[in-house]
Length: 144
Image (cartoon, rainbow, N blue to C red; front, side, top):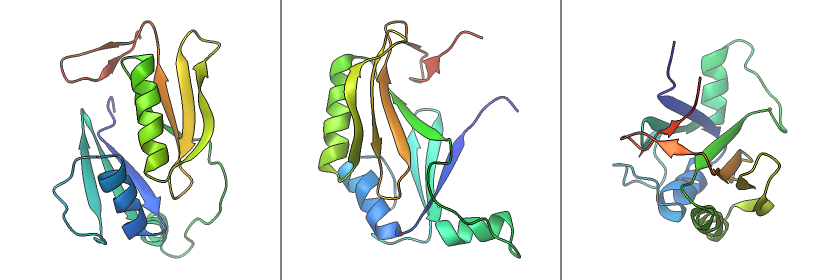
């Protein structure tokens, strides 16, 4: 296994999440409906999938689906090409209904970042780094 090409988020309310990602943040999808069974969003190199949380839990273990709430130790990331882009994405997220957890600021590792949560409480970091470089598919390049 050497690549992640799909991130699946279990969502509590499909309509709210579709409106947040498609209509609010402008994520690209062929889905036109407001309350689909499942939806996939395109992004450079990775697809983002929204799937009902209860069905996702049942898919993991039908007889004993995982339950719980709170911070799971996982964040999603949007890697920006400038500080201005970080600010713009954070403003867009806020206008789409995100809760701003940490306003963008210069951070200890030399970059600039902030955090927001989506309607289901998933944490997103929006970050820029002075050494960030991107390949021809706009994927962040990282040294091994």
